[in-house]
Amino acid sequence: MRDHGDGIDAIHVPRLTERFYRVDGHRSRAMGGTGLGLAIVKHIINRHRGRLTVTSTRGEGSCFAVVLPIR
Ligand SMILES: Nc1ncnc2c1ncn2[C@@H]1O[C@H](COP(=O)(O)OP(=O)(O)OP(=O)(O)O)[C@@H](O)[C@H]1O
Ligand SMILES: [Mg+2]
Image (tube, rainbow, N blue to C red; front, top):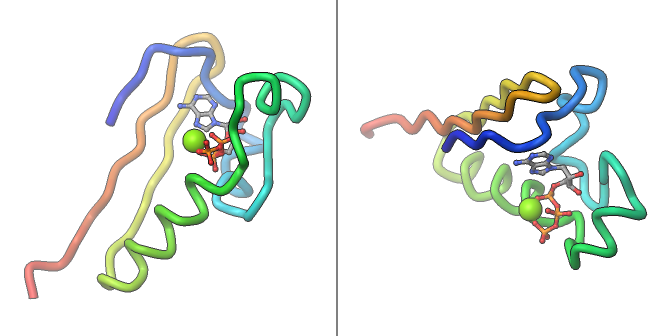
C-alpha cells in the first residue's frame, strides 16, 4: 500500500510496529489513532510467516509491503 502523505522520518520507521508508538503523539491522538494498528498488522503477518517492510520519505509518502509465503 502506498500513500502520498507526510512520510515518516527514517529514525522512526524501525519502531512503527511497537505497541502505542506514535511518530507525533499529540497529532496522532487528535486524529483518533490508538498506536496499535501496525503492531496488530505485524502480528498477523508473522503468524503467517510473512514479512512487513516499510519504506518512507519525509514529504513524499510511505509504502507498506507485505510478503507472504505461498505455503
Ligand atoms: N501512512 C502513514 N504515514 C505517516 N505516518 C504514519 C502512517 N502510518 C502510521 N504512521 C505513524 O505511525 C504511528 C503508528 O501507526 P499505527 O497504525 O500503529 O497507529 P495509529 O495509526 O496511531 O493508530 P490505529 O492504527 O490503531 O488507529 C502513527 O501514530 C503515525 O505517527
Ligand atoms: Mg494506523
